[in-house]
Amino acid sequence: MSEETRRSRATEAFFGRRKGKALRDRQLDVMEHLLPALRIDPNGPPVADLSKLFPVPVERIRLEIGFGGGEHLVHRATEEPATGFIGVEPFVNSMAKLLGSVRDRDLRNIRVYDDDATVLLDWLPEASVDQIDLLYADPWPKRKHWKRRFVSQVNLRRFHRVLKPGGHFCFASDIDTYVNWTLQHCKRHGGFAWTARNAADWLTPYAGWPGTRYEAKARREGRSSAYLTFRRI
Image 1 (tube, rainbow, N blue to C red):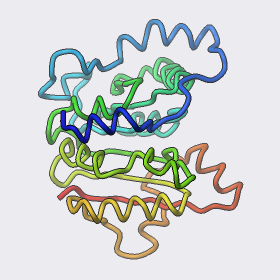
Image 2: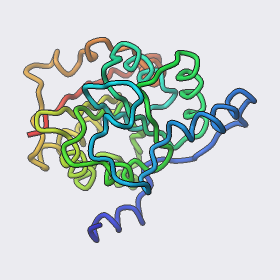
Image 3: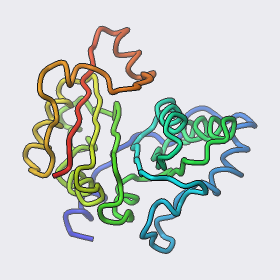
């Protein structure tokens, strides 16, 4: 681990609180019984082929960092059964909600991690992921907190390492400063090509987009969203 990475983990928190209101009995049950079965352990032996993490055959690997209530992750896993999804979410209530949906729908192409996404990224094999989704991440709107935004040069290097050549990093946000921040950081990194050809490309939701509660809130408050796609080069 580089000195820069150690400093990053010691001084930056990319997420806020870990738990909200008390979990209901059903949520406690999935956290006790389903989470251990689906949780990836970065302290365990390395896995060269991520498809082996799943009990069903998968052809692609897709990582979603900060899945919130899990609506998008569940939607994608349902419509793409041949894709293995890894969802990262440190917020306990959100993890419990997702796991409830996984059990109800008997989804077998989802694995999860409930802690710092950077630890998982450093564990993942090089060139092992087809797509990374970072959707409506905490924008940390105050300038003094911008260093906590997940998009940074350190994390873009992590993305670049684990993405396959030609793989995609997809970023959605309703916060203009974070959209501009992401464009600037990806340009500075040099290993990501923005795929937009005109304004419609980045103002139009992704194909099959189910919407999220964060997007709905933004629209209620009069904010539009941007949907950026970068290709790993």
